[in-house]
Image (cartoon, rainbow, N blue to C red; front, side, top):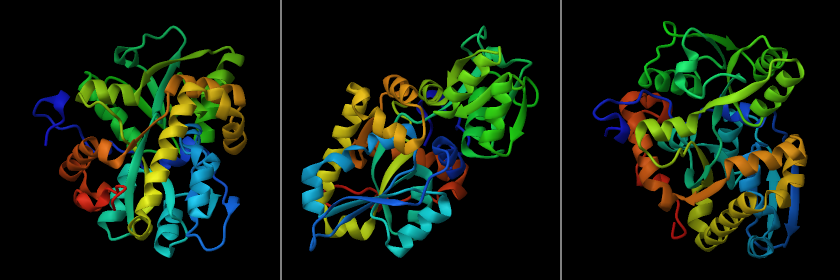
Length: 343
């Protein structure tokens, strides 16, 4: 399979977000739980969400939907700390629904872990920050140094490959300085030491604010999701998924319909009325409320069911199977990875 915008050339691997990117998007996730409702005798719904602004906003309807709470009996929420915790919670059956990078869902599913993709969340994407007067184009990077977190992670590889597709080769036309942690990179940007930086939101906005205060104002030069769509010709950037435990999907197909509706409604509310969810999202993620509102206005969170996103996801997985199969467990997952309301 060939990426539409690249003719017969293949975009190199890691086009779905890896866990380091997910963790950096969210900051540190807590492990504490909160229960919104409880009705003995019902199955209960246990949800784990990374405290990322877009992911939290897009799943906020699960907390407020009274019909869902009544049908499920109880809705309990917990944080996520990393990929090992995803695997542990899924294999132990201690979580029913969770946010995770799409390629990790595929990797776990292919390796026999009981997880399926219920839908995808649109919106999360790394951005490239640069000097306030920098051109909003790839050409701005020629001769520059770009600071990037997590060498070899998904967004690092995707960034370098997209740069190559746009006429720039890392190590020749521009250089890269890697940072082992996101806080280290945030400090470098905020202090003015990092001229260009690839960062996830909401940290990119925080770094830009700190840089402005230090006298080195920044602007968004490029956004990876937009560049992926423009370069490949695809209509979406389905790198983040809502995963569901397979046994739960099999046992509660009617509840999946209610969950899909709650997720659709919450994404719509977060886009149309960000001020309505911003206070709670800010409290859960630790991001300033004003920043949450601005990001939701700009990123317009969306939710699409697995059925609606299947073509994009399948194309993504086929591409990874051909170019970097280790990211998805050695091969593209079969159709059983897609959970539907009739699962």
